[in-house]
Each structure stands twice: as structure tokens, then as C-alpha cells.
Image (cartoon, rainbow, N blue to C red; front, side, top):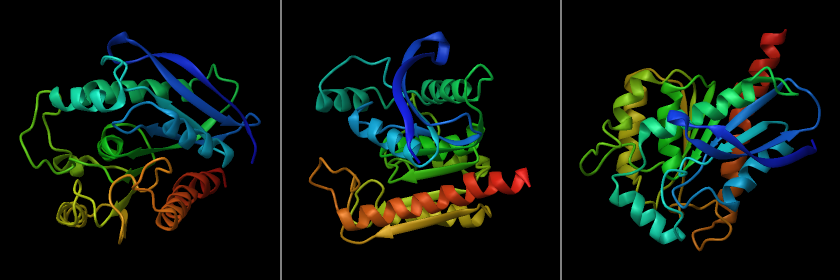
Length: 253
């Protein structure tokens, strides 16, 4: 399916703060399934925009809000160091900014109609996607190597609750994509997360890849592993096909 185009828009984020969001959509009026993209800690960047456009080419309305609008505009490594020094970005702010993205694509004032909505996140965005599966009105959540779902250190005022302790709130199917050489989350953390999902009877599927660590989808980084990345994207596509496309068709009858 061809995409109509992509653009940067402005939203009213959490607390009324103006934030930017990158939107891409298919041709036509819909109804389309949609994907909310929670970007990674390195920032609201071209890699995040590429993911957003990819979903539009596959028939989704996709939107990626900039959840780092509140922090200084620093070079990549300095920005990540700043975020870590602040105890992470505020969960409340991030969820509010993502809600603004949901409100935008679901608004009746748009010239397209949106049906079921999924969320996907990478790195720190994977942690947010896991959390959003219980805190936002989404129909499917994909966590790609989300770090700190299980907190190895101390909680912070910005992130006062471990996401693993929010698992009981999860109200949609969850997909997990992980590298077995990753340090955060490492294999033990992924095992503990899976055990908690099983204990609570949640609908989920995890896929783990040998020989890869963090960010193995990222073509511009040395961690990129094309074979495993291609298979991971196939798993994501199939997951959303079932829970967003096929489920929406079943509802329509």
C-alpha cells in the first residue's frame, strides 16, 4: 500500500506543553488501523521517523510524538546522559504526550478514520509500550528490548513504580522482542517478566534471538543484525495483522 505522505505537526502534550509529532498515513479515508510509536532514548530522530513511515506503507496511520520536548536539545550522547541523570523521563509526562498522539489520530476532525490502535516502543520506548498497554486505550502493545521493566537499581521520582509491577493492569496482547546478548533487559530479566505475565494469565508472545544485543534493528549502528532484524519485523507484522487488521475486520463482520 502506498503512503499519502508524512509531516511534522504540533500537539498539546501533557500539561498543555506544545510538542512535535511525526505522522505518516496511507492514501484514502480509512478506516485504518493505527500504531503509536514510542521512540527510543537516543531521541526523536530519523530512525523513529523511518519506523513511522514503514507502518504507513503497510496501511497504518502512524504517529510518533516527541516525548523529549521538555529536555535540553543536546547532542545524542549528552542527551542520554542528561536523561539518566534526571532519573529517566517522567512516566506521567510520557503517557500524557502519547495520549495526545492518540487523541489526534482519533479526532473526528481528521480527514481519515482510525479503528484499532497498537503501540510499539524500542529501548526505553519498549518500557513505555509495556506500561501503556495498561494505562492507555490501545489494542496491542509491542515491547522491543525495553530496558528497566524490571528495575535493577532504585526507583526515582520521575519513574516511581517498576513497570513489572504494572503487569496486572495490562489489558491488551503484548509482544516482546529481545536479544539474548542484551544487558538491559538481560535473559534473567526477560525470564522474570515472562513468568509474571504467565502468573497473571496475560496474553503475550516473546521472541528471543541468539547472537544479538540491544538495538539490533538499527541499520546505522554496529549492533545491527539483518537476519534477526528481518525475522523480528515479520513477528511484529504478524502480531499487528492479527490484533489490529484481522480483529478489526472481524468486528465489522
